[in-house]
Length: 459
Ligand SMILES: Cc1cc2nc3c(=O)[nH]c(=O)nc-3n(C[C@H](O)[C@H](O)[C@H](O)COP(=O)(O)OP(=O)(O)OC[C@H]3O[C@@H](n4cnc5c(N)ncnc54)[C@H](O)[C@@H]3O)c2cc1C
Image (cartoon, rainbow, N blue to C red):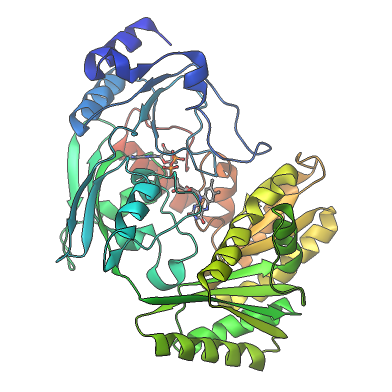
């Protein structure tokens, strides 16, 4: 990286907050995307660690004047290559901007800097009597800013929605260096076009989020987990539809192919409490009153039995609940050595059975293993494509195209939470018309006329 750029960065943030050492810089150039899918990484970068919004504004103004590429860096947990640097770049690491500014109990909000991690937030509210932050994508190293621009989801979206539903206000540095403030603690706000909702889910290409005000939820006193096994995947899907129809809203409903969950348990030397059937539904339930919790168990089991469930298991003790969660969390790591790609399409629940049958046919046609686990409660399934050596098969592009066409046929979206990043750009045209894509590109151009912010991402 050019010396002049490094000197300018040192002037803005101070020498000790500019990283140029090649090994250290490299660790900021990648994210958690599977090896077979990861774009070619460029490490000719400088890492800058600003202390505040004003410093970010100065860095961006300079980069925009000089037409230099800038990539914001959160926790680096993206699974779609969004945080990977593919050209010489100034990497703005948000790690020093991690303060929790205010918990406002009367507005049920928390205000924090964008570099606060999910772990910081979880730990803060573990100590709180009555409030918590409900969104939990799988990796607690993710930062608030990253979660906002990736519109993170996770297992609890069934009851509380995704990140978009939690973001009340934002402070953003635009790609031209100006600072803007969007939203606030309001419940109703109809003034002007909704720029806040454009930034949420923008994958870091429209601005750098520096502060956020997020909604909190009251804590439930009682919680538990319930596991129900089925022979047939379409019975499991039907049961979920019936559960919603009956007004039941668990915190999470996860769908798991038995073979994947048993493999994950074996991998970490634990035992999954059910060995019968081909698929499991894993419910996490929480209620304010103990009686309501038991009533919910009964209703869920009743509906599942009406839909041919073959076994159910209630995890009442904290130890049993932790075991289920630990094994569920290990499904993804247990596939790593064979994993080529994890497609995270979302389809309306009514079309899930059709989608899963289509996936099975595609797996047979291309002779690959595709295992399905995912957040069935919001229709966001994760199809993990695996081969013996974790390399893409030769015809991989055709295989992926067939899956995405199936998604669109099922009225779905080609990604439900991981985003387009730098790995699915060429698939957007399967879901969107030329007009829709040209509108998205025009919006990027209005925000970022010199295309300095994370080019090659999201579009
Ligand atoms: C094991 C595991 C499980 C996961 N499970 C889920 C899941 O269930 N649901 C889910 O939604 N996700 C999941 N993820 C994905 C991941 O956690 C999210 O994408 C996360 O929201 C990214 O946050 P980050 O801070 O790590 O961002 P990074 O990976 O650092 O960056 C991602 C993108 O955000 C941009 N960015 C980062 N910070 C800012 C900022 N302050 N302003 C503007 N742009 C910024 C970057 O430039 C990049 O484009 C999982 C990841 C892992 C590793």
